[in-house]
Image (cartoon, rainbow, N blue to C red):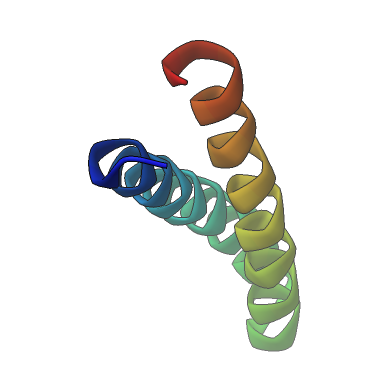
Length: 60
């Protein structure tokens, strides 16, 4: 795998984690701090998957 493809995969995953983690925090924190942390973590996991799929389906 060339370095540029690997770097693009990392970038997509990072952006997905950031966006979905923030959305999870925004939704979860309305119900309390612990809920915000847990939902943000779930959002991060979803963001990893979405970023990876975007890279696989559209950029590779």
